[in-house]
Length: 247
Length: 356
Image 1 (cartoon, each protein chain N blue to C red):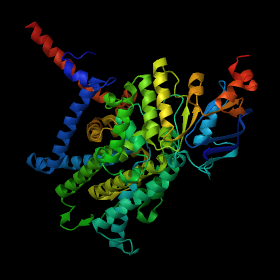
Image 2: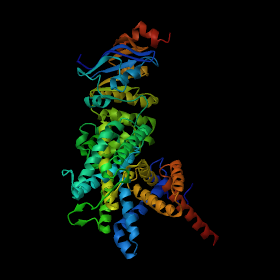
Image 3: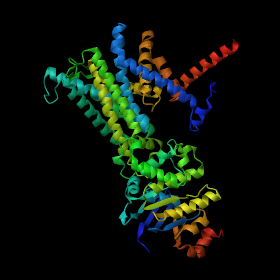
Image 4: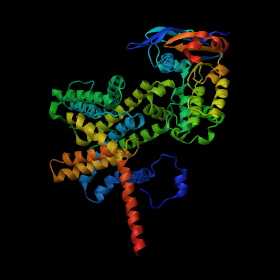
């Protein structure tokens, strides 16, 4: 197996009296989808927040390509390729779909384009247009993001993160709120992303998780109780007791 | 309210969630503002023709105030930052003109003394930008009401600093014995003074309109909508907003330099918080974010000030009531109101036709 792109070492976090992350060790290797599962309130999103830099851990280290990013701002991590999506889709509702994509495409070397009119930033425009076509959003490019359906909003968010040249993509429940057909399509898109980037996937849809993931880690009460390939997780007694078997 | 003249084709093209009434009002207002701009450009001729020299004075004042309001509108409209300390930049710009002039006449501080307009305005822009940089480093770490309060505090610092400059008149202010000297331009000539003020206003308007269209403008809109999301896209939100704030500060200081030349007088009251409030009023009334909005905002402000103060010394009372009305209805209300008035007028006309 290839080297770890993202490595989390001994991460701990306490909110008041509640320990939401307990000495978490985790790594994501190049070209793999590593799924993070666990019951509601297990601390999955808090872990993503810490990796993305939106919440400071109390202890532990986060390494991207072997480089410690623990003290860096969110924006710097993103520029290094640590990119996230949100559990509740977060778009610029007042901006057009195209502008949303331009902002995502523009984060690489945006200084050169800064003083120029939006329409003259060709490189961004081409990349944004390609992303529109790839995600079936070309027809709604001029609409404001607020006018999209939920499925389209999920697609737009995926298009945005894939434009950001991620090294590691943190996907927080990308299937949430989608219908069965949309889920199937989204699964295909996530699988296709694997060639572009390593993925840490948080998801409740177990069919999707077991179909997509190369490895799975199980988070319960802020601690990882098991980690391994899908088969070993499926048969793990601890996991079944805590999560899968429902008793 | 339903518009009597519904145009199906035009409506279908409009994206959902738009408010056509406000849009139509905005278009009317835009025409009015462009007309005002034309009047401002021709004001020296108009005032000579109509023999109303006082109106030229008023038009110059309006242009300078509108320029200052445009600068505030840039940070409010583009980045959603509501500052209550914008008058500080006017004070800084005013004294950047007055102090070198004073030294040029009364001696002392040779390095600072001078009557050159280029020097004055470069100094004003530099100091304005510097003050914006310094205060922005602190203020931009906050948002919303906190940003408002902290800019108010910084603004008061400048006000008290200027009041404490005993050598330069303290509370009483300072009269400019000569105006800034530009090669070939004599600011003692009211017409030239006016055109310089209008040039400043046009510069500010073009800068705002241009910025809005650049990628920088798009990035700013993103930070206005959701700054955390922008960070998650990798943008240095703080630096982007600071750059805008510095630009707006320099622009506002330039308008302060113009104001000093126009009145041939500066005083700490230029930087008083009530002046910051006036600028906010102009921006909100014209609709924050509309590039030309400060034109109508400043016009209404100047007219109200003139008209109301001729009726009563306590002109701030009706003025305050109007401010409350505007704040309650929020930005855009004015434009919607205009559209309503027009729509009602049309309905009336149609009814009159039907009666016949």
